[in-house]
Amino acid sequence: MLLPRMSTKGDPGRIELLQGTLDLLILRTLLLGPAHGHAICKTIERSSDDVLQVEQGSLYPALHRLIKRGWITFDEGTSENNRRAKYYRLTAKGRKQLELETSRWDKLARAIAQILRPT
Image 1 (cartoon, rainbow, N blue to C red):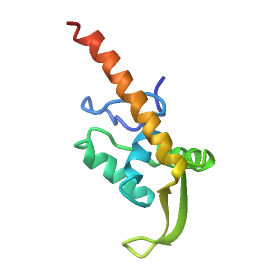
Image 2 (image 1 turned 120 degrees about the vertical axis):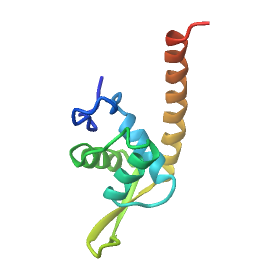
Image 3 (image 1 turned 135 degrees about the horizontal axis):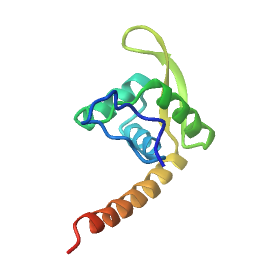
Image 4 (image 1 turned 45 degrees about the vertical axis):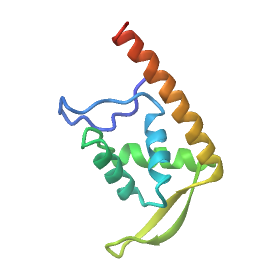
């Protein structure tokens, strides 16, 4: 299962992600503090050494999904360039979900590593 392509733009260095991975990355990014959509994208890109590039067509549906689940909320504000922006932040429920999803991710990564590098 793949996300609606976070963006590979024909670049073989970019990677498609498993469904739900973008949600996890957004939750982890918001653990650092409130951020608007563009800042979330840029943080994910920088943190992944530009391997992951989140497009708006994937980001905003994910943000709406996370709001609906009660994992994040938002406040209206003004961005650095004086534009109206929504600043998304993690809720207590979102922090718990981040812990759960991180644990699941770690388990999945260990299982894949065992298959790719058997002892």
